[in-house]
Image (cartoon, rainbow, N blue to C red; front, side, top):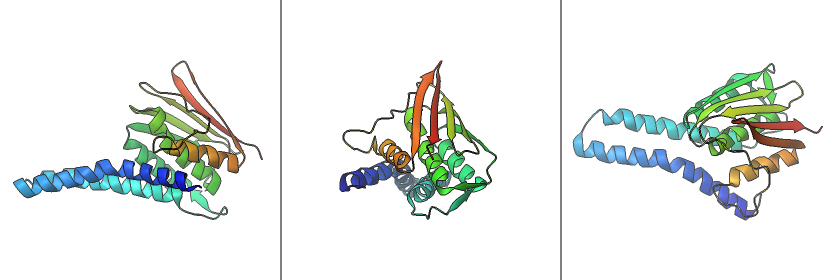
Length: 192
């Protein structure tokens, strides 16, 4: 990863955390002025949102050995709970109980990418088959197609797509994405 991509990635993580942290700060200020205990539930909700974002990002960007496996339950909980923050309802199906690090990381990247192609939320279905190929179908208001080209310049808006595409290339996966009759799709196939 280059210095520019590291800076863009840090900017993106900060961008995702600023909203719940500002809500916490505003809630604490309002509570100080009014002593209204009902504000505490809003503050707690914002803390939980920031915690979910941090937990998800920590898992996505932590260094793990290629021999690491995600349990289905851990991965499912991470992607479902993170997606709920952005009004995306994810269903994840696989017969694989222990999911390889590579497949798990691709699924985590896809989860965060969905908030870009589904700006108003919606429904998404993830399937991981026994050949470790990933199929995602998604629907919602004003969805867009995942751009499968590497961005020419990096910023906080395109860094996650850049990271997904670079990771797929490094682990020998191909990507096909598109829209068909209002349904978006992302297919990632192992070349190995």
